[in-house]
Length: 112
Length: 113
Image (cartoon, rainbow over all chains, first blue to last red):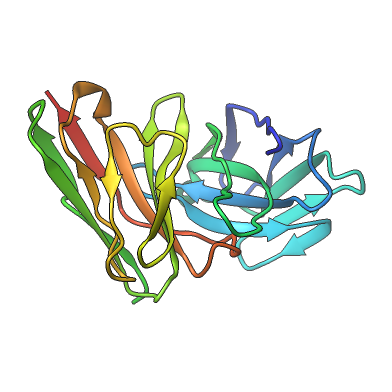
């Protein structure tokens, strides 16, 4: 499983765009990149998943450069309610007992 | 509403008193798993089940048991709880083992004294 490195914490203000970068230097060819969000006292929630280039949904965008050694979760125009921990997971599910490993994530704090 | 439910949400117990945390999902998902979350350690998988009657150990299975007799239910059993099992527990499910999107329950905060 590829090891991931994320900043421990980030601060932002309402209305700003927030970019959280995850490093995964030893990502394997078939690994996917998945991001989850966790609010205090709640279970994580799936945000977005990608393999290469750019993926966008109604919540966020995921940018993956050609070498795939890092990825950036972009949250447009954050609000106070985006204050949460964001996890970057890298791996591949091929059946059997495999899983995606959660690290300690990035604590995003959004202020007025 | 598609959801994963857990009960109880909060539990304080004493060392050695057997307990069960229930987990149920209404999405007909094949894959279910249990995690524990501790400060500084992230989420660690305890056990998982790829389908009915199929279970296997995750990263930290010691002191826990599970069963999967029905597709929707995946209870976590602590036969003889110890203080080091004090933690926040999450049940999760996903459609199959090959799907990346997981649905998590609300969590069970367990304190063992």
